[in-house]
Length: 418
Ligand SMILES: [Zn+2]
Image (tube, rainbow, N blue to C red; front, side, top):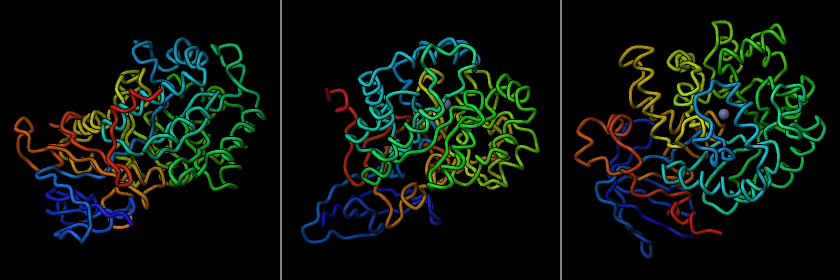
């Protein structure tokens, strides 16, 4: 049994009252054992971090590791031209080795920014290379191959989309090889979005996800051009269509949910599906602002995501947290979404959105010892509660340590790997 005591911390557990606990946190075998006023045990390793604030490891509910090499190469376009003219052609050039490199570059930024758990939609081909690379690094992830089997979609690079059965066979191979690996890598079905898939595939994904108890992760109601095309093709709004196909449920995460009318919001609420809010991307592609305050008020789980590096162009959790908080002040009125709520989206609500809230997202006994230690007393961060300082004033430069399962993470080492 290995035991580690972290002392001298302001602990921000994101679980009940009080919001801040002064003292120490004990980690045993990668799990949080207790927190509070704790004396060292005999033979226990002790580390002091006087004055640092300890938050749960940050959670990103929607990223694309496979796109990180394309940062800066897909500027100034709305969603559909951005995909057709830039992203799909670039993704089509990936090899297993470029995907491994893209994964390492992503992890350096994600882990360096305090993100210890994320959900990623990968590309159509070679997703096993991403799983293989992730298996070497200290992180928890839900991911899957992007499903694109509709070969009539305009702008598809030759050979990029796969046959329906081939797409499904690939999911079977990935599940068999990687789902549940080390209890930290998990497969999810990733239909890219309604417009990239045949109806047959979408129905089969819904059936298989239910039968196998696996998650579904897709883009929905992102941009007016996309939702209009769905309406013209199916005669239904995006959320109503997903519901009719059987794709919505507590096992589903929808990225974006910007373009929804009242009926669609009610469908989302009743389904139990969660939302991955990607505020920077929604602004950069001109998609709009998701109604986060309203969705949260309805009890819909909402987490945060950077989305892909080419549409952000950062993968930084604190950037999205600040952006989400600022947009909510504008959209719902100052104070409707407090800084503490924004931090919840970054931690426990993000974990809940991914169905991982019994594993991570808060500092509670029995949960994984995933932590971010920050210096929030730096003079440039001013005063106020730690949530206000973290959301509005701090940046990744104030992060001093990141731990995953009780082990100290060194993101810079990712550069040194072959
Ligand atoms: Zn995305």
